[in-house]
Image 1 (cartoon, rainbow, N blue to C red):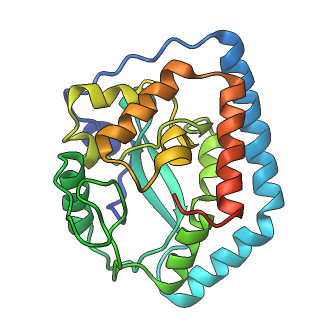
Image 2: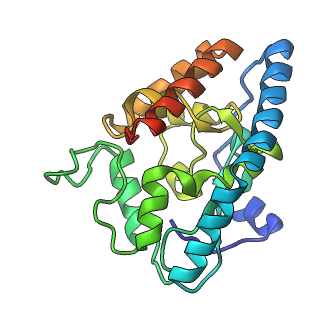
Length: 238
């Protein structure tokens, strides 16, 4: 979803709702060190081995439509702190965020669109979104658009595994219990993505995020990474 770019100081003032104050979940030191070591090693290695894919995707984005190759979007991470999340641009630069904002807010409130292809209240992307480019649609289906988030992981703003980082306007309509998903470092994949993406309501998905927070361990993270990679290789969309 395309959004206006903000400076770091502007983001800190405007991207964090005034009510949001999420304490960090207690994390054993051994798990913290092991998780960060895995994140740094895997993201650095991932950027290296996928460099031909990254270059090809960058060229395809640039050739299809004018605009920046990378899409920079403000997201909220650990404790609700804003950071810039990177993706390959998958939309036309003229895309309006208004439709996505309303779509997200409806889904969080449990209203949904209730269409034939989109179950009421199920957390899914907008179907047949005309703002998405042809190359962008492929990048999304293959999840190549998310590869630049390995940079966020290397920088410590994200982890390989954790709840997905929300857009600030999502958090504006959170119920208080939803906010606990911000008590850990956000991830590239997580329990919700690996087990129920595209099949659950927002509340059900958040319940999985909270279950992950309560169950976190190094081996559990490895299982979720393995399951996610298998789903991508086999073509299952989540």
